[in-house]
Length: 224
Image (tube, rainbow, N blue to C red; front, side, top):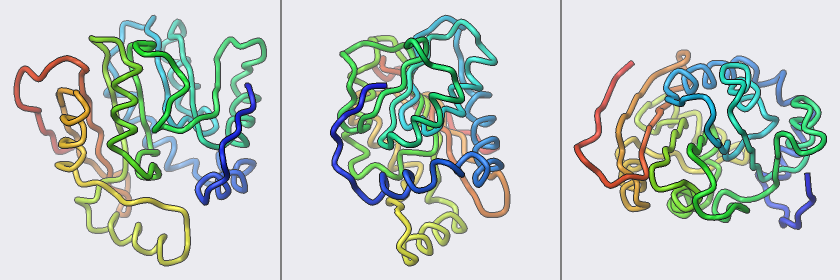
């Protein structure tokens, strides 16, 4: 993994501190959200996939276990998290590239991927609209996007987010389902499915699937 010069910010500093204990500390949350995301992925099994905000590579590991022939890349702001992922995934020799970078300025060429996944990371991005536009840029014309993130429509999630900010934790603004749909439409996506769900009494999330194609019909909404 190449070293890149990305200025330190609160999110990067916090996750650099947590990198060595992150997998164990957030095991339940990561496994639950990964399952919800994987169950809504539609692939043939040989596509080029980008995990934007890949952290320590948990989702990539699950993707490769379910679809061994997928060609996976990961990008994350925090180099320390990527180093943990590199050891876990065995990426020596570049078999599974992990790259340090920002969601708002992805270090990939236009049309590089068939699928972009953003799982549990969009609420950390200062400019989510710019990040979504970047996801659209690196997707091929018929590519797809899947976003799983905290949902501001849930009161418990709103309260949790407020308390985290009050305690000085590095945490961005949550989006409501309708807000994310608007951002996606403005970024050139056609929203195809919206799922809202809870993984326990506290965490309420949403998974939104979208296509880089022009909209053909209104998005479908599911409560699960």
